[in-house]
Image (cartoon, rainbow, N blue to C red; front, top):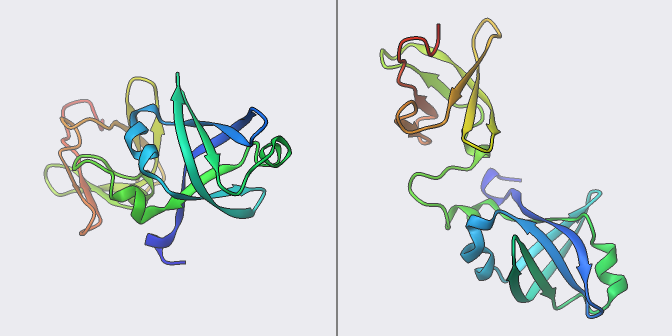
Length: 173
């Protein structure tokens, strides 16, 4: 499957709600407007995928409550519990701000310092409550953790597959 057609998870069905087949979904609350615009979605559970059409979405606290056209009973909704809701990567990218990136797009990028010295390759992004960390693996297999903030990571160029890090004293020593 080409990278742009890849399905990425945007939430998880946590439970059912009511008798008509509505489900309770955990999702990133800062993407509420994005979730509201969705019409079609794929539910994936244990390797099995089901294409679903969203009939209605409502929000309460930190959860979305979704009614699908294809799910009309409590029993059908129970079968979807713990399924991941996925959409094509291209659909997610339409809703990103200019300074937002998919973790999937950053993995494997080369990382350079201010002097154009290759530091290593991005192996992961670790999500912490306060901030995200870029995990860089060096040539000699050392792991470097860099806070993912604009002051330290001023440039991300996905077309050239490179990321620039401001190497301030003590950061990489």
